[in-house]
Image (tube, rainbow, N blue to C red; front, side, top):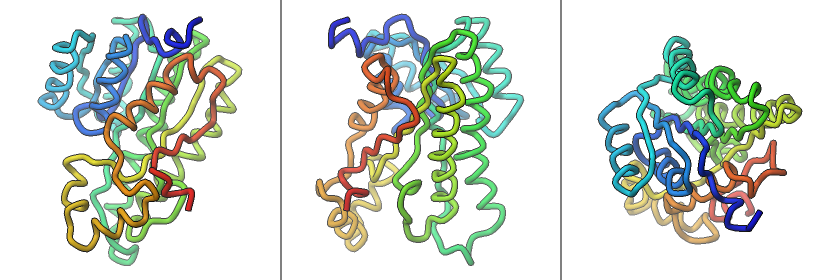
Length: 256
């Protein structure tokens, strides 16, 4: 197999949760660009449709599937639909996530805590079990859990998010052990600060922005395509001997 072919995803079905915007959308577009048939999942049909249209206009193949990762019924319904339409899946990107709370733990409500873990950690478990489980019968597949540097190092005022992402990191390692014998690889991408619409305010803040940039050895936030490139690598045969790994796309944040 040529070096180029090892990044070819032609003939593969890739599911991306939280694929309607930001990092999820960039990953969906990149997987489609490399030949995958992409199923973009999320709660908002409007954003999902926008992603699907962009992919199709670029010559790729994509469909949308409305799904809430906190709902057993939604994910089970998605599993059944994927079986009917494709007979299974080859790539699962667990990108759906939230981080609505910024504050110290004494100001964190149990509702905030439960919501963050329900989406960022339990949602990953649910999708791996119900959707990733489709790979077991095929004896092949790649699961990519989107994590964060918050799963590796402490970040101020983000304890619930860090707890969830730390859980994702350990879950990834354990599942990689369990499913390696079935030919299913399980990895994570731990990204740092990424330039998106959601982080624009942080980056432009007169005090916070410069402080964050000074903490990043590369001196800038990641571009969306840089996170998406890591996902293509982990989805493709180029990473066929990689499992249980957390690929840090953080500009060197955790190296200091």
